[in-house]
Image (cartoon, rainbow, N blue to C red):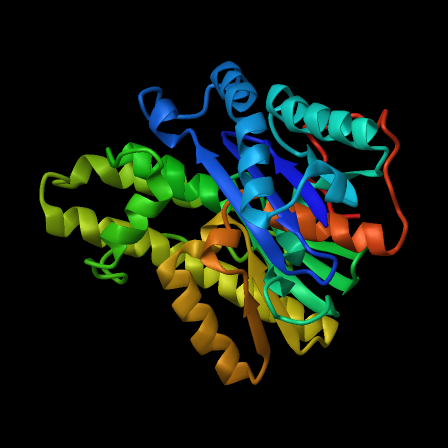
Length: 333
């Protein structure tokens, strides 16, 4: 069994997975209510709350799995990217348990956790695909040849898709976290009400840019009556449509360029109902196989970290105990 901790931002999470990849136990302690009053994540507050919740979560997942620390084969933690003060909490605790039990430690890139999450829970072994990771801080296309063998195809030049959702939601006066609120409003609106820009760059580029969309919304705001529920819903639907169209078309382009028949999508934004529906219809038309991470495995969670660590465990690639966290390692390699 692999026990993993995830503490890259404002969610404290612990999970245990079996060596056959089954998720045996998973717990998450969310800080959303704490940070809502600030309109965003406060790093110092986040790290203090990780300290409070990490040990109880480990005890809970051990109980849920009917296991003791001595039964764990390896320990893992997110090493980056993320908030350095938050990353240190999970990494330090996982290393301490590894030392105490004389077991290996695995430092896992948060992006690799997302990248492999569509293969969890019965989706089969990790195999070649083109993957879209779309989250609050990252939007990237990655070619996966096998677990541990990745090629970055394209990423955002400015804002990530999740940032575009969250920042636009804040401009519209929606509560934190803004992305899920926009998804709810968008379901009530007309996605063609406003012609917000789609930045495809040139026709062959696999990079993204969402800052122009955010600016377009900012310039449109003075003309709008946001007190009208219908207008608010139309703006949200139109913003969401612009983001979804770019994400889906770029993923389709990447699959064509790489000649892959399997595409995967993960990250917090992939919980978006409109995006999931569009992906399903678009890739059915293309005749490609689509794997989406389960919604509870899209947002920050330790299950995906345990699963990624398992791939390294099976290939014998343990991390040194002096492996440092790195808040900036967002590039697939």
